[in-house]
Length: 171
Image (cartoon, rainbow, N blue to C red; front, side, top):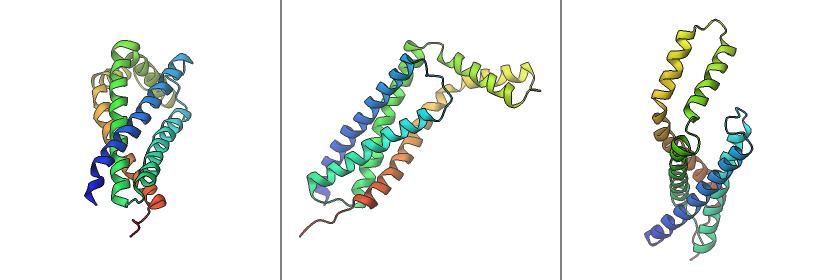
């Protein structure tokens, strides 16, 4: 059974890379349409669909190539693919914040400020300044969270995909 382990890594790398690259293309599309700072749920839904599609495709093609699929293999492909996609996403976010859109953090701070004023009109300017400063100061915390949440999401997607696509080895 463990002879498939190298294949699992190959499938995780391939389909995680597909998800990461398609996600980057989607981000460039958002930039070109001036929707990078859009607060709608549509961006999140499309991003999740990209990840789910790539992982399920990877699990399906693994089963097709190997003739069988265990739940353990599906979990490995799901988690591995999502971690690879998260690495692409983190590298792109670093490039975005530092080179492509250098005032990204400041703009997100302005959006946060406007949202907070809308939800709490009595908030003082000092409190708003403190919040936006802390947001900018601790923006780096987003990177490990991206990795953790993607890994957890990939685990769930792999579990569901594995339960649906599970196929026992034929004797």
